[in-house]
Length: 480
Image (cartoon, rainbow, N blue to C red; front, side, top):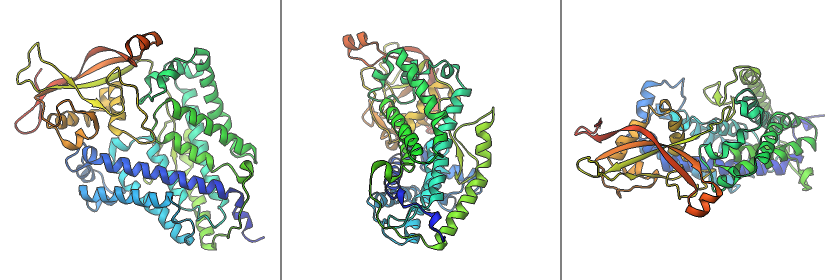
């Protein structure tokens, strides 16, 4: 009998596509880090890594930055991740020995682990842990000229099951609008980062919104069980999930969450479903088979708490139960916001505030601001500050650790912070005063859209941040 049971050549094509897609998402993740970290986490950032590692020990947040931190080192780690991920996208390790392929996949996992574990609130999103969990399993898939290990393929299905089923349960247990199928009346308008087509999705007929909600329930609560059925049932369930995720990609910006879910679903589809011939593939070495068995035992043990969380009435979402993010729990939109609010940051360069002071707005790259600007497409790229601004508009408790620091950076015209914005109304000069206003946003109706050309209508709701100036010592001083 030997080890023939250990591999299934029928998944060689899906394994190859899975690896390419995952490597591309790694590349996006490292690129977003390289281009944004200085303002967010750098030595002079809003939440500096050096301050974090002094407060949090290595055992709670394993990272190479506990050994040493500098902005140059962080940039080196991020750009090294970009280079390795690009090499994996190009397939440069497809035909190397198994140990070399494993090492190539281990490097981005270790580097991104170090980043996420010191990333604080900027890296608190569920797709960070998902990338690390899936990336860890990818280490053991082997190169293109060996047969894919069945156990790793099943572990990927287990991730996909928890991802989809957990999201379905959190909805069913959460907002009543998921149970009466009305959540999509609001979601396309109030989601964190609307996309170019979100306005059109929002204005779909309400019966179609109810169909959307019902289809979501079926895909997340029923179809996941079919992932463990024989082919072609498992492949059909995966294809349904891919279609659902493409719908979500078209309707909004959710970083790489939808793309990574599609990547996972690809690993479920065997070559017979798409009619591809299977080439001659070598069996992986015995030591690799032993490692895969050890990996499987480890994941089974670590799955106890996430599995218990799934069936718990107090289900939590997007939580890691181990320091290395090896087996996590996921979920999204257990409650749906019915009304959209946005924080609009304004400043002036007038030396003295008067009733005639003109306030000028800072424009963010992704989040709604100018009502006449169409929501842009950024996913799978992740605009971390824009996402946190959405949470800040929900409640100031989400922004206590960083919003005052953002105000300070804008008053100081910090170049790294200004690079995170789409438009600086002062062209790099320092403003004298800054404030933040809370607005109620809603999509225009089709008639309003035709008449005004605007995508949004907004109404002021009051101050979100007190008017402030920069003191002589560089600290923010409230003036009202």
